[in-house]
Image (cartoon, rainbow, N blue to C red; front, side, top):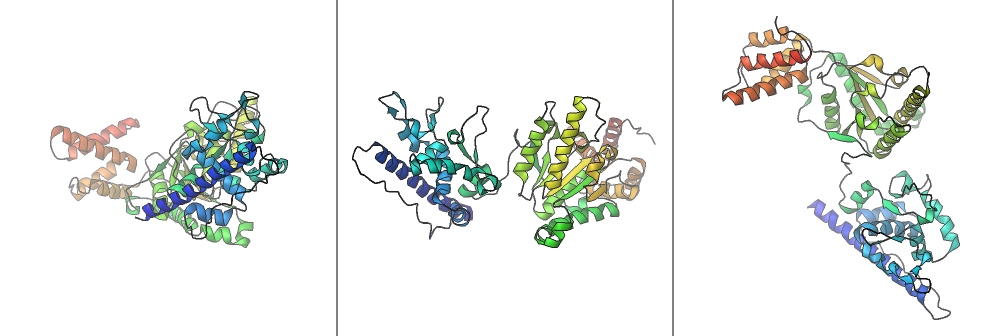
Length: 450
C-alpha cells in the first residue's frame, strides 16, 4: 500500500512538472514567432510544491537552488517519458529549408523524435540569452549536486561538441527514486559487471576458528559504527575512510558465505565483482572499468566483494617493458580507488602471497579460512545431513576424521547424494555420501582410500 501511495504522489508531481515544461515551450515559441512589436516576454512560474511531499518535490525543495535546475531535470525526463512535448521543435525554417538552429537539439533518425540538447533547455527558459548560455557550465562542474550525486549527466561523445549541443541523461538511481521510490539495485551490465549475492544460511552454518570469527566481528563492528567514524572529526583525521578486509584460504572454506552473511546481518547489499570483465588487455580499459564500478557504488553503503582478487591485486613487477609499466599503472590506480572508497571492500583469494604489499598495508582485517579441523568437519557434516539422513555418531566421526574436505565440497557431496538417491528412487544412504566424497577428492587429485 505504501509503495502505491508513493508511486501516485511521485506521478502527480512529475505530471505537473511536465505540464509546466509544455507550457514553457508554448510560451517561448509563441514569443519567438510573434510578429507583434513591443511585446514583452512573460515567464511562467514553476508549480507550487507547498503541499507536495513526493520524492521529487522533497528533492527540489531541499537540494535545488533555482528553477533552471528544475527545468533541466524535467527536460531530461521528458525525453524518455513524454518525448512528444518536443514535437513543436521539429518545425523547419521555410526561408532556409532547415531546422531552426536557435532551438538546438536534433531529430533522431530511428525514432523521429526530437532530442533536446542543453541549447534547447536554455532556449525554452531564456531564449537567446548569451549570459545564460555561458552560465550553463556552472550546472555541470564537480561541485554541483548533479555531478556529485549522479543525478544528471551529459552525453559522452567521441565527436567533439560544444557543451550546449550535448544531450542530457538522468541517473538511473535518481530516476528510480523519484518514480517508484525503490532503492537502486543495478543489474549486471558492461558498466557494472557485478552481481548481488545473498544466502539463505545463518551464522550458525558458518564454522570457523575463533581468531577468524574475531576478525569478522571487527568488520561487523565497523559496519555498525560507520556513521560514528564519519561524523567524528578527530577520528577522521587519524584513520582512512572505509574498511578493507582480505579473506584467504582454499576454495569452499566459507569466504563467499562470510561476505553474504556480513551483508545480511547489517542489511547491506553485497556485490561480487566479475573480475574477468574488469581486467582488459587494452591500455586504459581496466582503469575505466574499475572507475565505473567505484563511481556507481560510491555513497551506496554497498559491500564490494572481489573474489579471486589475486588476478587484480597481484604484486607489481619490475618494469622491463611497456606492458609492465601499464600493469603497474593499473595497480596504482586501483590503490587510489580502494583507498578512497568509503564503504566496505572484501578481497577473497586462494593465494595470499600474491597480493601486492601496497594493498596489504591498506587492509584492516586479514581473515584466514583454512581447511576445517576434524571437530569443525563434524559440525559441518552434522549441519549438512540434518533432516536428510540419520548417521550414528561413530559414522559421523569417521567421515570427519578420514576425509579432509571443506564446507563447499560437503555441499557438493550432499547434492550428489540427493540426486543419486532420486535416480535410484531410494533414500539417501551412507553409500551415496561416500561416493560423493570420492568424487570431490578426485577433483583435487586426492586419494579416497584410507
